[in-house]
Length: 176
Image (cartoon, rainbow, N blue to C red; front, top):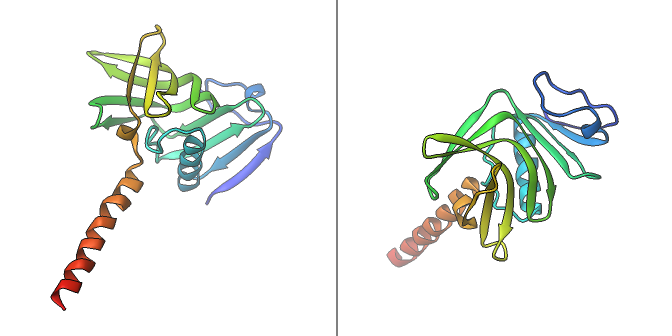
């Protein structure tokens, strides 16, 4: 069951990289489905494509509107392969960042496999008028990819199904 809590003193999970002070006044959402929907809405509100952080197994997520601090916590780390970019990304059990429109900075818990090494991603921003997403590593080197490469899988499935439904309706009309 999902819940939303606004708290002054927020408990911090064991092994967490954050402090109670960072989470003061946070809006906290619990429950996998509610967290997934909240994180998708937050990303889209910042201008990012909905599929850029495909975390479905979230236990808790939170946002401190005053500072832009966010966190997403899941039971264990998760790896995702983005086919459109040919990139494997690992999301730790807790991902944190400070967010503002078009940018997530001071990120923790996100790594990208480059060559044979896992490279920490510390910043993600929109460039070229939101047409590309730029990922910056902890050593200052970065790469950008088309934003369309991170489209939300749910929306892509709906978009793919719509033309098929239109084709079926047209075929039915032709048969009459």
